[in-house]
Amino acid sequence: MSDNTTGRHTMRAYADELKRLHAIVLEMSERVRTQIRDAVNSLEHESPDEAWLVFEAEKRVNELDTSADDQIIHIIAKRQPVARDLREILAVSKIVGDLERIGDLACRVARLTSTFYEGEHLAPSAQMRRDGKRPMIGALLHRRSVHANDKAPPASMPAGPYGNSRLTTPCHCTTFPVTCKR
Image 1 (cartoon, rainbow, N blue to C red):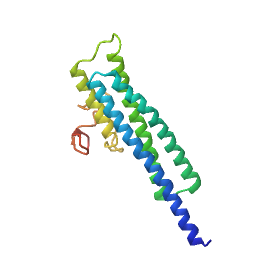
Image 2 (image 1 turned 120 degrees about the vertical axis):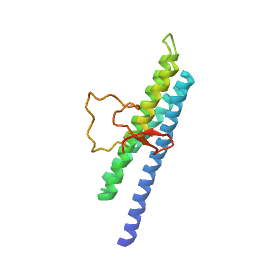
Image 3 (image 1 turned 90 degrees about the vertical axis):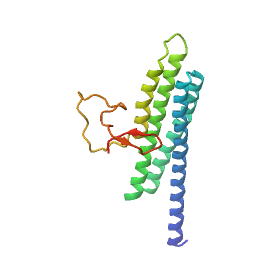
Image 4 (image 1 turned 30 degrees about the vertical axis):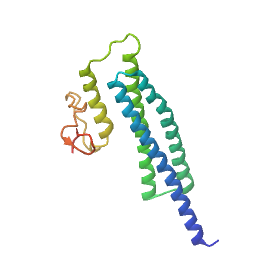
């Protein structure tokens, strides 16, 4: 086999490995999006049954997280990517970590719903539910919107309208109008 044929085969195999990794991340992002929707719906509908959907989805999200990590390790060990390729793989790794954390936060909301509406606990008022959703949605969707080189605000500074004093100006980066610093 010539070097040119071997090179094409290697590049095609590498591209296939990246496609598998990206497919894992896409499935994971869809499942996390569903978790967020189900968690918020369970709280709005005061339904512990809907909250259990979030817990069930978390199992698959954790499996996808492990699968993505395994695929990333495999690609780095086998292909030894450098420069742009390595940066892409490391960025995907960070995305996977963020998605898993967001899924965990959705589980926390679902756990609160179960706690509030199962048993003898006092349910939160409608105002508490509205106030509680804003910081969660703002934090989940715009965690990366705050510039990394900005200094953290002093501890004495009060929290802004979305739970973070650094989120202060309108931002319409997504379909949800929220506030973030630009």
